[in-house]
Image (cartoon, rainbow, N blue to C red; front, side, top):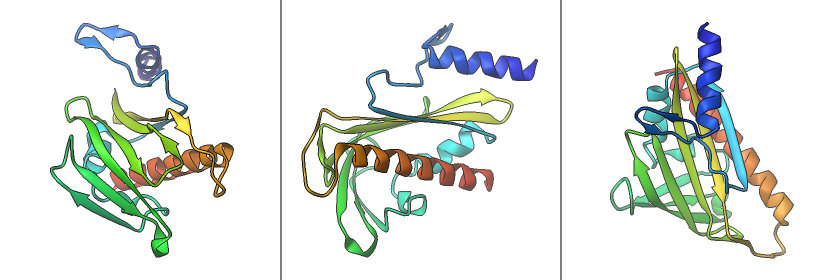
Length: 174
C-alpha cells in the first residue's frame, strides 16, 4: 500500500495534478533537459544541502571554487570557477522558495547559450523519500569552436546527474 501511494503521488505530481492546497508541478514542460531522481532520504535533508547555494563546488567535479556576491536568495550571484582556472560561469538567483523547496538561477556568462535558466525542486514523497527534479532551458545555442550543441547537452546531463548523486549521498549523512 505504501508503494502504491508513493507511485500515485509521483504520477500526480509529474502530471501536474492538483491537491486541495493548490497545484503542484515538479517539471517544466518547456525544458530542454530534465533530470529526475528518487532518493531514499527526506526532502528536508535534500533541501538542507541544496538551499546553501554557495557550496556547490563540494558536489561537482567541474567546479573548483564558488564566489558569492549579495544576499542568499533572489538577486544573489555566484561565480563558479572550473578546476585549474580553466574557465568560469556566472549565475544569478532569479527565484527562491524555501516552502516549496525550489530555486532557479540564470546563467549570465561562461556558457555557449543565451537565456539559460536552471531550476530544481525537491518533492516530498513521504516515507523518508523525495524526488529531485532539475531542469534546464535556454533560448539560443551559440555556435562556437569549443563544443557542439550535442556535446553541450551531454555535459549538462552528466553534470546534473553527478551533482544530484553527490547531494543525495551528502543528505544521507545528515
